Image 1 (cartoon, helix red, strand yellow):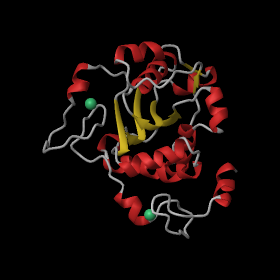
Image 2: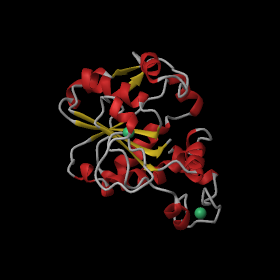
Image 3: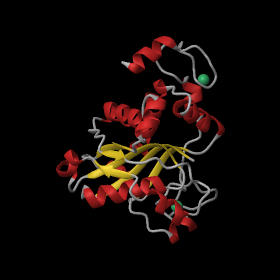
Image 4: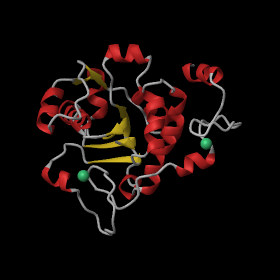
Length: 238
Ligand SMILES: [Zn+2]
Ligand SMILES: [Zn+2]
């Protein structure tokens, strides 16, 4: 309903180059294909792209020191001006009609990462927003992404995590302190306890930056939901 209403309010122009569009999309074909993707080589744990020629799988120096609770993270877009511009419009300017384009971009990961090709029974779970943030932004961008991705992938979506308190942006803080600040910021909604047991979860968010939020979500999902693996999928690598 919301998305349809927004479609109506905003004329169909390419979000990046403002060419008029007829097909109900929000990016023209050339802007969409020009968006820089994360392509190999990238770190097999955090998905950080690496400049240079490495043919075998590898972990970046950062990940060699960290033991993430989630199995690995993949982003569709690498950090570029246009990529960040799109996410900014989506997240902060509430252009939620971009959710379907961004979900399409996340779906590309299913096709180009062999590790995902084998998984057919995953459940999509969005990273939750604290309720008042959700009010301010009218919707949770990760939830919109997960909804759209569910539509095009036929994977079920469960809004299973709840954010119980707000945490400020903390990208500048050391990892240990970030993780400590996030402790207890999420809970699992009890009705999902049984449904998640032993399942694979695709944790959905717009951006993957330090991985701390994903780490805490994965910890709760594995501890309270007893899920077997958590794979983090985002539109952009921050
Ligand atoms: Zn365009
Ligand atoms: Zn890494």
